Length: 242
Image (tube, rainbow, N blue to C red; front, side):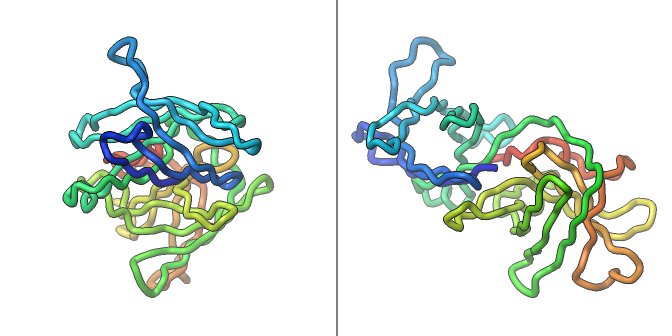
């Protein structure tokens, strides 16, 4: 459950990128500093931050990468702030690339391992504007309120239609998942397929409407049942294509 921003500095700067990374537990300012490469796969950058004592410390490494399908450049980072290592990517929107901007968005990169839905409760409500949804998902171990925001990165049919966001302690939006609009081949009814990174792991659920809800703005979140109707890339993890 991570989010953030990264900005490319002028080429002559010792610190090539500066930014922020957020989770539900922290908000940390980071820097990417160029490092000497020992081999082709050696990291291109050290990721550094300042600790509570004011000391600059190395918290990870980063690589310049290129998307296999899109051909767009992005930055892959492995970071550990004392809670165990995690992976994130820094990618650009189409608008940022067109403007040759140095602005990147940090998004989570997680495994495809899914937890079982188990006993899940939740609800999703379409908002009146901005093609967005608000909702919650909960069980006995966690309770997450979130929003579905239209995915401005979508450039192929299989890419997610929405990103799923929660807020950090300072109110910064954090992407925790993806959602796809879908239609049941059996009933013809529209529904949403959600993949969410919860505190217990990656969770697949569907948001559907019963007879009383149909035509309205409210959807019920139910455990995922594999009926073969899922969108093609709905199991591709939370990594967002650049």
